[in-house]
View (spheres, rainbow, N blue to C red):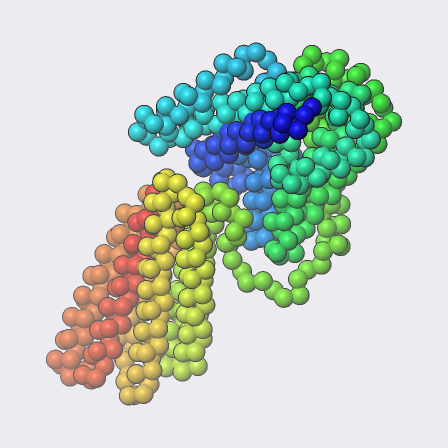
Length: 540
């Protein structure tokens, strides 16, 4: 092969690989967008049952078409405390099974009918251009992505077929099992996609190329890709908390131990491929894909009962952080899936609203009990709320930059809700000022007035409980009840101000207390308004 022929071969091979990866990206991104609810529902089914978690990991990866993305999301969930290590270990095993779907799709390229599948590129792009509905556009891009996968595989196979003689001579010289394993590790770590490397190997088999003597050699590379696929999760967890790093280590231990066992088996059974998969399946591409699936399913069956052992070893090797990390539901790994990132933002929003409401309660107690010692704690809670809010705003900006139109409405609602929550924090600050003024000027309020204010505060608390329930459980049917409570708050404000004016006219109240009282009941009514605004962003 001349230098010109070598360069042409590399260009065609890389072009085919690029088309393949574009197809996988289109497929992954649009399936994630179209199946957003299903993915959230899947990750919501995490439980203490190991088989359930294996199924969740496998199904999520089959949907997203990337074990790397799934594992990164799992690391993110562990990092924010939504998932424990035992659940994560089983789910990672499931993700390894789910990732074999891509190889099975690639193996179809060995059959002539797949040439017709390439027309899906045109059909899918036309759907995206012509259809008005967002769901139909995404479905079109999914079809286009599927078609591009087969176009890319065909380009790779054609490039190899054109230079089969020269390339085969090179591949026949590589027969050392350990070297082949390391090649698989290195290439997968470089590309950060075991599916891509496996698909290239399948394209080679379609072109009639074999590695080494054509026996077990190709399987050693598959084992290597399995280890190399851990790099994404390890990089993702490197700067995270102890549990997230343990999840990455569990992934590495599981894949490495499984590959090591199969490596030994293949060394002891030189004609393994000949007596098993080559006898059972005619097409070499199918043989490789089936081994990939068999390997991951077998490792899961072997190691699933040992989840506890993997967790304990990871805890021994990675000690708990001495510095307690700040609690948060936000993790940049979640940005890989907009729907899951939005779900975490909603939980963080509730955490922020809890802080703002606690600031309000503390400020109110400072006024009610004339307690100067509660003013500083109120300000500390307000500062904490400001910090959480700023973190959420930064996270929302990053999410918005890569989100699709379907998520923009939810992101806009979250921005709006943050504003409403921070108004609650401002109201808490106002109450510290009313408390300060009352104590500085010796303003006293009768027990009946305090009882009326307490009743209004009770209504605010009821409204907050309903709002949290509506947001967390996605229950728009609670909105009529929420709106009724808010209307009761409006009516209470009017009644309290009318009674206050009557007391002023009758000389029962000091004029200096008028401004404080009217501002307080108006602030309580405003607080109810902000909670109602938040609740009314809930959609089924």
